[in-house]
Image (cartoon, rainbow, N blue to C red; front, side):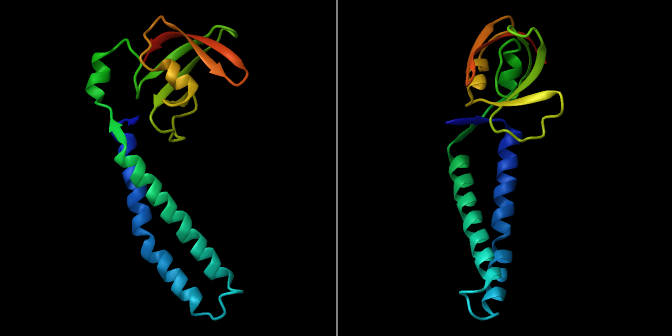
Length: 156
């Protein structure tokens, strides 16, 4: 079961609603392109049909994800003030290179975390290592280029 914050679930629901609302627009494009004649050489028709197929696949994918996800109670994460949970931003110290970076543990990467914060999904190797770790813990991440070690400096 996928865990997400309330805001992440709302973002997925908005994306789903936008795709469903776009169905009549795609259908109208298909009908208009069909009216132009021979479908074998009608690029507009084929492009609209392809868009319709991609949108429908995305709708099914989002509906499946929404039915199988659990929303994290953000009050619970505040009660566990020294434990990393979804929605937390943590400062990590890289043991190999000695630098500190900010990471945000998310259920779904949004791509808009900000310039200084790296989003990490809970299902990634880094996310799995961070989840439920405490301040002061040293975590091991099995990265493609070997094992990396980080110390959790603080939870912001």
